[in-house]
Image (cartoon, rainbow, N blue to C red; front, side, top):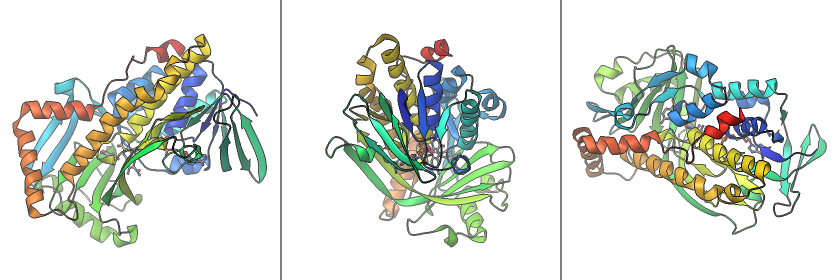
Amino acid sequence: MRTQVAIIGAGPAGMLLSEMLARAGIDSVVIERQSRDYVLGRIRAGVLEQTTVEVLRALGLAGRLDFEGHVHDGMKIVWSGRSSFFIDCATHVGKRFTAYGQTRIQEDLFAAADRRGARVVFNAEDVTLSGLDSSMPSIRFRVGGEARELRCNFIAGCDGFHGVSRQSVPAGAIREYEKIYPFGWLGVLAPTPPLDEIVYANHPRGFALASMRNPQLARFYIQVPLTDSVDDWPDERFWPELIARFPPGMAAGIRPAPPVEKSIAPLRSFVAEPMQVGKLFLAGDAAHIVPPTGAKGLNLAVSDVTYLARAFTEFYRAGNRAQLDGYSATALRRVWHSVRTSWYLTNLLHRFPESTDFDQRAQEYELEFLKASASAQRALAEQYAGLPIEGGIDFLRSAA
Ligand code: RFL
Ligand code: PHB
C-alpha cells in the first residue's frame, strides 16, 4: 500500500486530519489498533471550545452538533460548599462553549469517512514505524495475522499518549515535560437530568464536577485517591459523596440514577518537544496530555491537526515547506497556553494529599478574590476560552 500521509490512530485527531486532507485532495490511510466499535465506545470529553465548533462547521461536519449540542456562556465555580461565581466567557471574551460528547464527534467523523470511502484499517497489530528520516518512510503492521506495509511521504502520529509514534523516534530527539498528580477522577455517566450549568466544586473532601451530555444524560466526576478502583465506588457510596461536595441548593438538583458508565482516569500534564522529528509529525494526545480540569485535550487535538493540515496543504499545493517546518513551534504556543491553564485550575480546585487546612484556606481566598475582581475573572475567562488558531481557518472553507 502507498499513500501521501499515513495517519496512526483513528481517534478524533487522526480522523479529523484525514478529513481535512481529503478536502485538499491529499491522500491518506488511517491505521488503528482497536476495532471501530471499541473506538466508538470510549466515553471521554464533553466540552468544545468555540474554535473547535468553528473548525467542524467549516468542514460541514457540525449538522448534528448544532442541533444537539448545548451552548453555554462559561462555567461556574463553587467552594466551601457555599459560595460561587460564574466565569462568563461570552461577556468577557465573546466566546461560548458547546457540550457535545466526544463519542458523538467520533461517530460524525466515521460517518463522513464512510461517505468519502476513506481507507481506515482497524485492528492493526504490532504497528512499527521506520525510515523517519528517509524519503519514503514506512509503517509495518499485521491484520488478522497477515503482514502488511504502508509506504508514504509523511507520518502523522495521532495515536494518543500510549501510542507507538512518539516512542519510535531516536533517543534524545524529543524532550518530555511531565507532571503526575497524586489523584484521579472517577467519572460517572448517568441517565438523569444534569445541573443547568457546568459546575466545578472545590471542597475539603476533594474536587467534584457536574457536566452534561444532553437533557437526560448527566456526566459527573469526583476526585479520588490513585489507589482506588471502580470497585471501591459502588453507587451507594458514589452518589452521597458527590452530593456532599456541592452546596445544598445545587446538591438538591442531583438525582441519583444507575450509571451507564463508571471509570477512573489518572491526572497528568505532559508535553513532548518538538512535535516533529524528520517525516513524523505528532498531534493530539500523542504529543501532549492535560488534566481534564480545563476541558482542553480534545480542543488541542483539533487545533494541532488544523495547523498540520494547513501545512500539508501548502506543501502539496505549492511545494512550500515553511509551515511544515514551523508546525511544532506554532502548535506548541497554543498547547502550552492550555497546559498552563489546566495546571492552574487543577491546583486551584483539588485537595492535594499533602495539603493542610492552611492550603485549603489559601485556595478559598484565591477563589474569593476571583469572585470579587472583574479583571481577575476576565483574565480567567481568557485562559479558559483558549487561544485563537493562528492564521485563522479560512483555508478549510476554501478546501471544502
Ligand atoms: P485518542 O482519542 O487517544 O486517540 C488515539 C487513537 O490511537 C489509537 N492507537 C493506535 N493505533 C495504531 N497503533 C498503535 N500503536 C496505537 N496506539 C494507540 C488508539 O486506539 C486511539 O483510537 O487521541 P486524540 O485523537 O489525540 O484525541 C485526544 C482526546 O481523546 C483527549 O484529549 C480528550 O478525550 C481529553 N478530555 C477532554 N478534552 C476536552 O477537550 N474536553 C473535555 O471535556 C475532556 N474531558 C478528557 C475529558 C479525557 C478524559 N479521559 C478519560 C482521559 C474527560 C476525561 C475523563
Ligand atoms: C465532561 O463533560 O466530560 C467534562 C467537562 C468539563 C471538564 C472535563 C470534562 O473540565
